[in-house]
Amino acid sequence: MNGASMNGAQALVSTLTGLGVDICFANPGTSEMHFLAALDNPAMKSVLCLFEGVATGAADGWYRMTDRPASTLLHLGPGLANGLANIHNARRASSGMVNVVGEHSTKHLQYDAPLTSDIEGLARPLSHWVRRVDSARSIAWDATAAVQAASSHPGQIATLILPGDASWQDAGEPLPVPPVVRTRRTPDLARVEHIAQVLKSGEPALLILANKATRGRALDLAGSVAAATGVRLASQFFTARCERGAGRVPLERIPYSVAPALAYLKDFKHIITVETTEPVAFFSYPDQPSLLKGPDAAVHVLAERDEDSELALTMLLDALGARHAPRMQPRIETACPTGALGPISIAHALAHAIPENAIIVDESLTTGRETMGYTMGARPHDMINNMGGSIGYSPPVATGAALACPDRRVFCMTGDGSAMYTIQSLWTQARESLGITTIIFANNSYAILKAEYANMRAGTPGERALAMIELDRPRIDWQAMAKSMGVPSCAVDTVEDLTQAMLRSAREAGPYLIEVRL
Image (cartoon, rainbow, N blue to C red; front, side, top):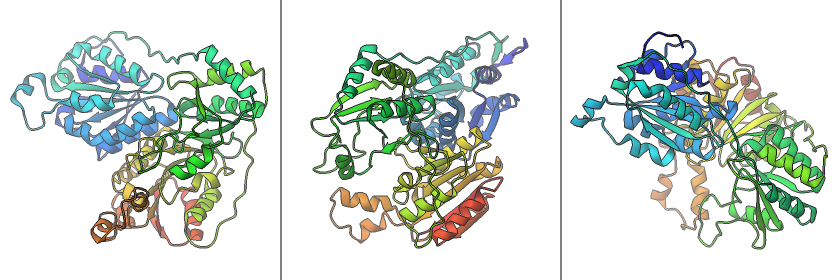
C-alpha cells in the first residue's frame, strides 16, 4: 500500500491482498459497487459467478488445494442466503474463507427497504467469525481479523458485513496491519504415549485420518506407523482432500451404508482418530445404530481437529521407537473397459483415464460408489469429496480447484440431480478457460433417494412418491445446457465411449462436459 488516502472499499481490498487473499469470487449488487471498483487492484483476481452458491463453493475448492482462504462478494442477506449451502459444505470440510457481504448504508437501514434483512442472524449459524464494519477507518483491522480467523487451523468461515457508506467514505492513509499467524496446537504427549502402548499390544486397531492428515508428510508418517505396528489405515467415506494413487500411502475407505460399515469395523478393538471423530452413520435409520464401531471398541484421539497431525504422528513414531518406510501403492494398469455402463465399469474407465496429477471432485453418489476402490492404483491424483452432504457442491468446488491449480486437469463427477443446483458453474469455467472435465451421470432421477427410500423402510413408493424423485418429464438436455454456457460436450452410451471421451477431454485446454446416459 502506498501513502495515498483510500476509501473503505479500496482499503479492504488492499488489506486482503496484502495478507495473501488474492482472489475474489463475486456476485455483486448495488450496495457493493465501490467494492467492485476497488477490485481493479491488479493484486486481486476477480471471478464472476452467476449464483452465490457457485462463489462460496469455488472458495471452498480454492482453499482445499491451496490451504489459503479466498474471498467472496455477496449481495446483502439474500445473496448470503443463496451461498449458505456451500458455506455449510466448506465448514464441514474445514475450509477457510472470507465472505464480504454488502449491506445498506447505515442511515438507510432505518427505512426497512425491501432488501433489508438480519445479515448477522443469517451468517452466525454457519460462520465461526462475524463482524459488521463500523466505519471506513476500521476496515483494515476488521479485514485482518477476518483473514486471521479464516487462516486458522482448522480453517474457519469468516463473514465481514460491509455497509455501503463504509465502502465509499474516506479510510485515511493506510496503516500497517499485523501479519497473519498460522499456528496449530501441539498434541498431548501423554495421550500419544498411551496410543503407542495400545499399538504395541497387538490388538486389532484402525487409524482413521482426515483433513490435513490424508496428504503430504502426515500421510507418509501414518504409513510408517502402519508399517511398524500393523495398524490399518482408513479414511471416513468422505474426505476433504486425499492424495491417492500410485506412489502414495493407500487408505482403506469406511463404507457409507450402515450394514457394510458395521461389518467393516466390528473386529477392531481400538479406533484411533486423527483430525476426525469416530465413524457415525450419515443418517439415522429405523432400528440401525448411529455409532458404527463394535460395542467393545475403544476410541483414542491422537490429534484433535485443531492440532498438528504431522507432529502427532512424528511423536507417535518416536514413542514407538520406530522408523519404518511406509508401504506405497503400486501402479495398477487398468485396461480400457468394455461392456455395459455401471458403477464398476465406470470406475474402471476412470482408473484407465485419470491423467497424471489430476484432481477428482466426486459427487457421483450412487453411480460412483465403487470409484475409490478401483482407482487405488491409478496415476497419482487428489480426490475431493462432499463433506457436508448439501448437493450441488462439485461444479463450484471444481471451479475453485482449477483456478488454484491451473496446471492440473480437474475431473468433476456429478449426478444429474446434483448438477442442476449449481450448473451456472459451467459459465464461469468457460469464461476463465478452466481445464475441467464435467462428467454428468444422467439417470434422469434422484437415484440415491430411491435407495434411501428403502433404507428408511418407508414402504413401497407409490406413483406420486416416485414422481417426486424422477427427472424424466422433461429430460434435461445436457449438451444444449453446456452449449448455452460456452462449453463443448458429448454424450456417451457405452463404457468404451466414456473412456475415450475422458481421454480426449484431458487434452482440452478448457472445460468439457460428458453426459453419461444411464
